Length: 252
Ligand code: NAD
Image 1: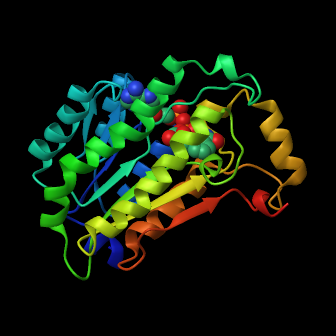
Image 2: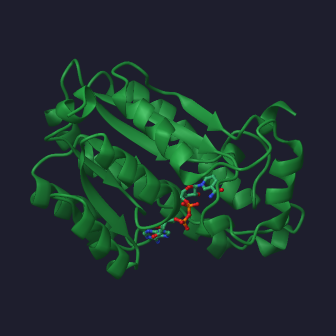
């Protein structure tokens, strides 16, 4: 057993939206790092059960994070099944593709839906997890929260202005909570550029942009974002950082 696996043997990580894309890659990486995984998704129960059968002691909870009661149920279910929580990854998120100059297409309903899932749900999960994260924290191994935001929350870019605004809000919440929850709980964000996942399958223009303009010449694979999550979790010191992970596109 590697030293990280030994260190994490009894530690538990909840990753929201972990039956596909970036979330599944993070869950699989943290499982390789020795964590027991709490899987979650909105609707992919069959995939959730398949993942549970492949990962020892793992669990799966279905919850629609646009519904506050289901958000609370998710955390209480995870805590009652595992009895502790060491890492929370707020990965689940939704997008809306709207040209930035089509202001009326960005309806109030779209703004509210995006805000509910991308900002308020992570907030509720963090507040429901705070006590458990503090209890499991030690000086050598402080508990850790990772919020998956977006490069669109750092730069004036992205699939739509409402999406970019929610991710920017999540980045700011990350920094504010890093101050409020220290030193027991470290809070960081990963702000990916284009990543090859179901969300971006049909985004031909974005794929072209990354291929032609980004220094790395391509979008990221989910496993490459998961690798950054693993680095953040294994740190005992980093907090309040927004790790921009766009293959260098922001430099161009
Ligand atoms: P994905 O569509 O594969 O995953 C999204 C996950 O969110 C799914 O597992 C889904 O179950 C969950 N989800 C969506 N709505 C939900 C709801 N109402 N309740 C509960 N769960 C819900 O996409 P992905 O690309 O892996 O996205 C993961 C995260 O990464 C998102 O927050 C996204 O905004 C962010 N992100 C993605 C990219 C990219 O290029 N793929 C870039 C930057 C940021």
